[in-house]
Image 1 (cartoon, rainbow, N blue to C red):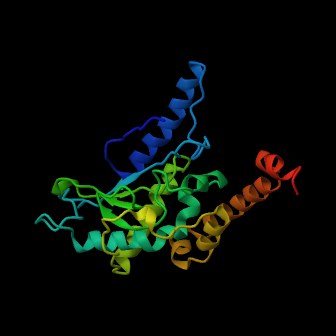
Image 2 (tube, rainbow, N blue to C red; image 1 turned 135 degrees about the vertical axis):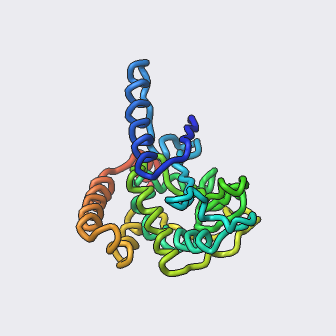
Image 3 (spheres, rainbow, N blue to C red; image 1 turned 90 degrees about the vertical axis):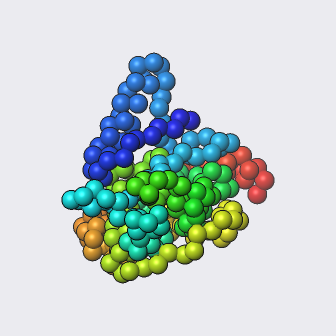
Length: 242
């Protein structure tokens, strides 16, 4: 596994960079006789691969970070945005974890969040609040996998934050404990994630009914295709024993 970091910039520009990097990495690997994979959980005995999204809002005129109150603390906008991420992220999991394999990464809680808790520099939470200078105040969403479409992942993150601001939500208190010891609060299957997306009128309104309908239909077809395949595990453990 390799960790690749991108310097902060505008949302669309950053999605372009991430998308292009994937294509370039695959091409470079092939030329050397290797394969570069962005599958979320490619190997059974190893941790999965994530696509952490660090996000903040800045004033379009002054460039000031709107997540800080200017006195070293978090702003009301920050809390509302985080509250939106916590409330609505389960409903966009079908985009943050878009494949049946994506959910294998969350099993066992190995270097991967299992809920939407927030914590200051707590890497066991779904939403980490990094220790930083005031102007670098941000929220790290640790839930998306490396198999996620960066355009869609960034878009739904902004949508969740926007709804938090619109509804003036408040996040849960930051935790200092090990969040892996807490119950799962994110969907554990793609089918469940799609059900939550279909039931969220707020998200459908912002993402577009046509997009959601097509996306959900496509993913249900993928689930049907996957479910129709008998796996090696089933043959090994069940074929001669049941």
